[in-house]
Length: 90
Image (cartoon, rainbow, N blue to C red):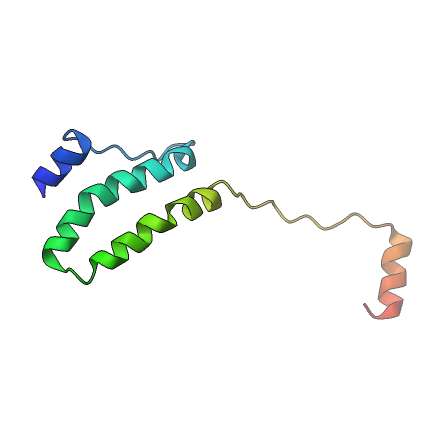
């Protein structure tokens, strides 16, 4: 395992966890997969196909990481409109 870490990361693994973590997510995943894939293949050849699936999903994960949820805010409505909706049973 140490040889895989050294071969794929110059002996050091850095994973961004700060404010800009989403920008480096794809690179971090590729580094971790480069280290983990040979190890997984050595212990379970059938599980290696899952590593290929994860590799193929990296662009999707990168796209989703850039999406942020907007806080929910109720639309501002006039008191008259609110009363009309109450009377309508809505």
